[in-house]
Figure 1 (tube, one colour):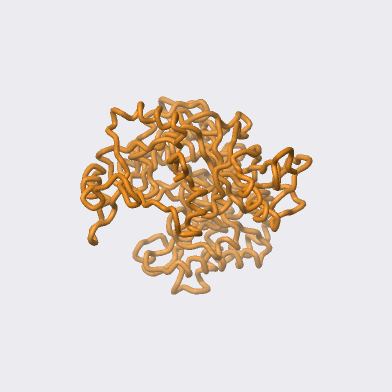
Figure 2: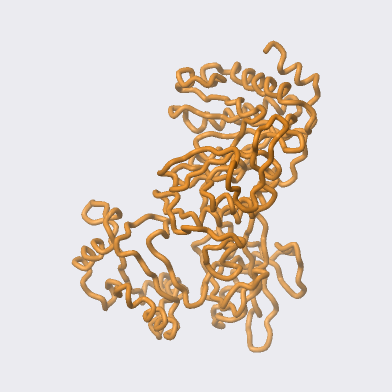
Length: 518
């Protein structure tokens, strides 16, 4: 705490170096005598905590708790005193790691982490440097967030300059350039207090708080809804009803968070879902409730969602923009499964998928090995493939094509590829869907190829515990990836080999060569 009694993260960093001036303030009790208390309501946990730490003053003390009806007055008073804000909790709430279902933070002024991308020359009385340039990673790209030149002590400026000098580079991390800036490799993370984010996403009236040495730069991104002015229940102009409804009970992920996720990854997802027929998995009451697939709308069509009837009288759903994604999230949609073909030529696919689906007994390393074996088999014929996690325990190997052949030609081709890979080790692989044939093996599912067949979209959420995502990765990333995969709360990125996908030609002669005998 500083001289005014305010908590200070930078002060804590200094105190940890000397071991002096540290107070221990306890605000919750999660374990006691070998018992896990996370499932108890907050009121009960606080009662037990009060017996262990009765004092609310002194170097070891319990955090004071105010009743809910005093919250508004407490918040106003904390802001007048220059404090960061208050935390409000549901009295009956249980403790859910990484979940904000039962608590919220009300800040007097917003605080957020930004990446230090450069610094300007000192001016006037400022020593060391004038201001630091800020940025954040959004969809794998560095976005400028303005600069901050206040909040530093002279000693703090000198110390930060020493940390910045080894990171100096000639290359700007932004696509736009600014004169008079010394650019840095984007490694340092600063916590900054500010009045608001402008419509352009830059901070206004910013003040440096501390250097976050505990947080990697790759984890820093700005919530797009917050950047436009507040945490409402409207996303891109679409009202989200029941925004606090918990969609993933074990993870505390709400309906509003699902909508915001699809806003965040929308630009990455759109090339893979726009103008393709979609199968939608809806969970109106969350993943613990009823789940059902929907391939058409016969009555109400959500705003910004398109419908069409194909030549064979099949009704389909498709999208044109990010608002369509948000509208589907508002409609209770979690999963989007696109066809491998586009509306303009539904009989001629441009994407083929092999879904490697391992039995529960199969080690993760074997599933990885199967993906690389399939990649190498196709590479021997000159074909480039890409990989993504399935959002479950499997891996999807994808091949992007020019629209030359119909499904009648390519469905047997995908089966032949699966069969030839399986022949290399029949004890490890099977291409038979029967559960009895798949025990202890990896099922190479080629049936996701065909008119009307679908596969979970890249960056698509799965309706499974953990709020997992089907995340595109490079082959290098896949080699080091663990079985846990990716979740809704991890920064979305665009792997280098997914940025510019060039459709490949598939000669008829090769189709016949690989498909021969089947």
